[in-house]
Image 1 (cartoon, rainbow, N blue to C red):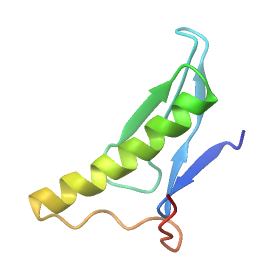
Image 2: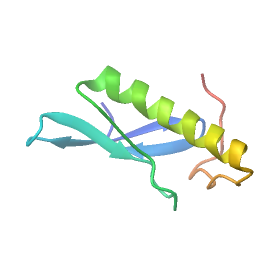
Image 3: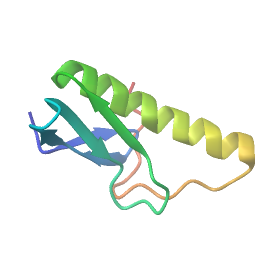
Length: 77
């Protein structure tokens, strides 16, 4: 697994907590705090993608411009 995750042009961190035996991360290079977690790699990736999608939906609903992704935006599924 990479040390970062990518979805729709956004990049997120991957960290391990031995204290609670969980993987977790946050959206990188964004002023808004977007966090996610999981008990394994697949759950972490799924929750990261869900967090990005929820963040974009929230921004749209609030009429807020989302923070720009760190890389050229791609609309991967």
